[in-house]
Length: 235
Image (cartoon, rainbow, N blue to C red; front, top):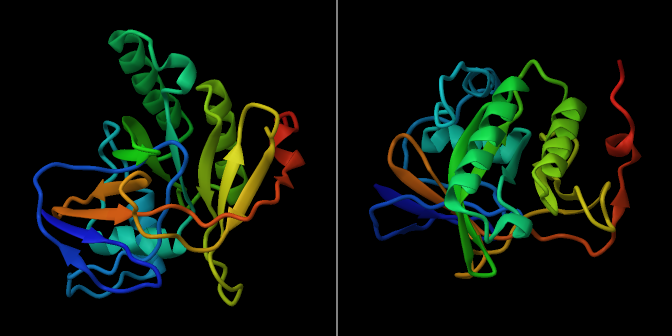
């Protein structure tokens, strides 16, 4: 397995190869161009859409090569969510497994492809988190609302939502959306990411054996309201 570390500003760096996988946390750790050592051409948007809308039989059936994952992180709409909050940190293992399975089933019912990842926030590591990708057939507003509602259902403080790149619209924007607590229905947003610092990072292991490490989002201090997230579902 090769391991690629994302650095900011974007540079190319390949580190030593450890066995095993690693990947993300609920607080929503980061991402951007994973400049890998692959020599394949960057896929077209049509190829990206094909990856994002493929069928799957289980939670790990969303397949990424290092090149297609780079394209998703650079241009696609995606998110990060986990199933175990602080409220359930001391719960029995069977309860945690059931919640993680339930989140996968809810994502599948919503038609959202997802892949299990592992990550760290303030040194606390979780292996019950998913990278989720917006299907080409789903409106972005509906995808964001689905992430928000699932975050609430699974007692998450927040979820990550990364908007797709708009041609000619400037840099890709990332959002930390608060789903519960005093800031529920608001977000902090920003552009770009820091390097992984040992305590805050995520890694996604691709199907071609590359572990892509992602640092922490750079976020503004302001809280932006999203009233559409709190509005009742339209019938």
